[in-house]
Image (cartoon, rainbow, N blue to C red; front, side, top):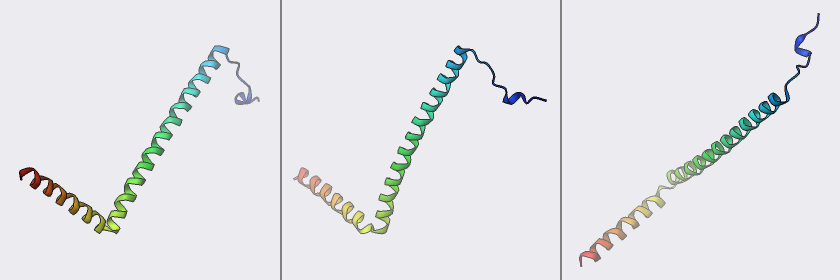
Length: 81
């Protein structure tokens, strides 16, 4: 008894070109999707590293915020004078 799965099937040349084009498009789509996901992951890692750094050393963030608030207050005071 022959196993039909092992017998190569004849394809029309147009059909095989269509199949090749279909798989090429799918490959391009998944390659671009993979790149965009990698970029999103990299951006998330950078953001989380900044947050973790600020949580470890909150004095830098407090100092920056106080300087910014004082500069704004001084600028408002100078505008009124």
